[in-house]
Image (tube, rainbow over all chains, first blue to last red; front, top):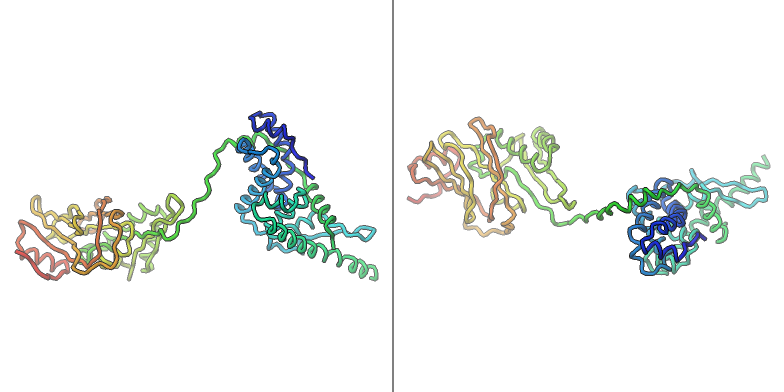
Length: 190
Length: 255
């Protein structure tokens, strides 16, 4: 689970303390970048999104009514910044051919371990709304209700998006896992 | 097939393994200090207005106006409304002899003007005034034509009580008034009167544009066009001759 900022730090930042605000941004920066990275799928775009999200925090943290709700509020800003960045860049990740990107490695014990490029490619194969839900669920460790508040849609919608996303991911990654031993066997016979 | 725990660990591993760029607090504070960009305005549909050029020229006057003068005015209008690129487009229209349409985004991002210029056989085509007004929902350009030598110099154009009056100067004192008035036909469609804008242009004897300026027109009603020639000093016979020479046909007179 990503690091949660200290409540006192949030309150001090809301009061206008520059040091507290900088400390808060320093704490949130890795989360902002990684979540944005998971959504947009590109380093430069993710950095730009994370920077914009942090700038938005600087601009509007004084308007946050519940300091304890900072985490969800911050995730919502990050998601919105990532969406805006994707709109700007007009990326259509869904249409990327997976076969060119998914890579996998087979361990000695036969258990499939899929490398970073593979899982990221599988993530990018998801529709953006499902990708947001998956990243917030698996990386930020939010449950469906928390994701619903962040994204601004009903809880049932998030559960359905997660269901579809998981099914799709398992299908994408499972095909590779199942195909690899057969290939190994064939290679072994050869 | 990876289970839920595997998926979680895979995604964590993938996102955690990507190198995190250094936090640039200076840049973030600078971005925060910049005013946030306003959201892009929504395009307003059904707000497209038309600007019609040259087709507002009355038929009789159109016949008396050199094509060179009309084309020069069109070119000037197109550049004034749509920028320098319009000149290339309008020249293309002339060369192809096809209708050309120009659009330009307005200050709010909407398409607030569409200009239609008709070409046929490499010339601007005359269009009845009623049709011109019907197609011009916002701006209405009136081009004061050049006239035969007998008409004298074109003067100002005014719009009063649903008529457009052109004044032509004969010598230094005499003048003839050309009035475009609506007929008895009931207009089938009214146009908002307060948005009209007129454009006057003056040409020399060889058809070259001498000067032009925009003028405001309070309103206009649809109808067929009738030119009324009137002058306190010019005999009626001479007015008839002027009208006939310009391609008109006398339909009545008051004397």
